[in-house]
Image (cartoon, rainbow, N blue to C red; front, side, top):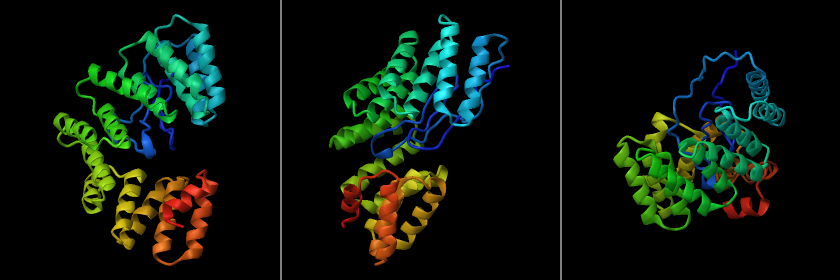
Length: 301
């Protein structure tokens, strides 16, 4: 029996593949990602799978577990070609697109998300996936159009509103951003996305104490490396160095390959006058993909 299972993988392109909905964690500017995910439990389809179509899907799943995205993609393409009229092909195309995104084949990923949407034009999760990819590709107007379409289709969706708020903030429209975050609170008064969004607004305006309080409210419920990094940045601005160090350490335990965390630790080491440690962290951040001039500018070197 083939199993359609939700699979979460770490990293900036985090998402799900081989899932009946194929929903990804959103990727929005500066690595911000909403935290209100659906239950992360396996989803099983009790279907007779004695056909090549489902056997190909099973084979793809095997390679997905080993993070061999290219081979997994080829098995899903074989499934699609085996039964081009199968109603599950919207899901197949979505997952092919996700695998292509992991491989950096962004134009192909957009094409396949769009083909999947042609088959299921009201699929909110597909719109969210494509919108996230458009942001990754700096096609912000297209991303906004997809997020706005999600809001039209689902008056209770908070993730699209969060992303629209972050995108508005990135454009400097703090009033519009606050409106989107406030709408999230109306939909769900206990939403972590509301508190996170408002925390980002306060951080951007320089109110680091209030931003740290808002991030803390979310961290208590659902800690993440991203939120810890935001709070650590606030603590650094407030010169609360021990608190910042604790958050950076906890975040690195979650995502040790995130270059921005080494930028934060370099800032911390600079404030502690530990220049050798600072320089090592700068080198690490660069080795993980950040431009050296960006790193040194960020820490004020």
